[in-house]
Length: 237
Image (cartoon, rainbow, N blue to C red):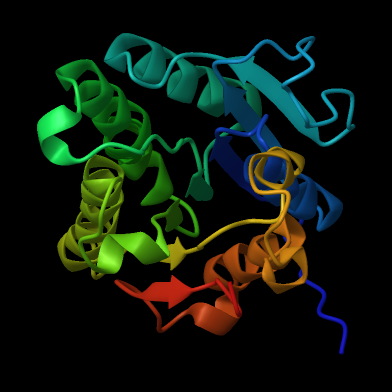
């Protein structure tokens, strides 16, 4: 069964848009008619930037969303360029792990909290006033592992649990205007993950485009009564 969405005349802001998942989400919305403001700290010319920067419906903004000044300036630039913001996808994030808490350095803790949680907090904070003027939906990327503690990547789990909790808070604080939901992936089928785990069952992994469709659903009118939810998007992974 094919699913189609129409986001014509809307503006979607995507953080972490140059990565595998972010580029899939940005492309899906652009192909559904939205104007996409694609934000990433990585330069569009970099080989690590996977999104097509020349797509006619995608405008790329290079910014570090750990820096509040850059967040504020970028959000205002998007509004000035496109007239507003209707949707926000908080995708910026990364994974670090392999050591127990007592062997994890504070730099790793601060890095994960910054990239996974602070970016989500700042983007939501500065986009909210504009989202309230339009359709108003936020979808943030948490993680399946945020649902419980685990060995070796506790700080990552904590940062993604923070994303889930802030999503629920945003939903509570904006009942009359902005819907906020999260998606919970596990291992996503990306070239980097295949390289890191060559012997894993890749067929069980979820493709970025499949998660992008769930994000589209959560921004669509079909999910108009859904807010504060954390949606599993890990299939059999």
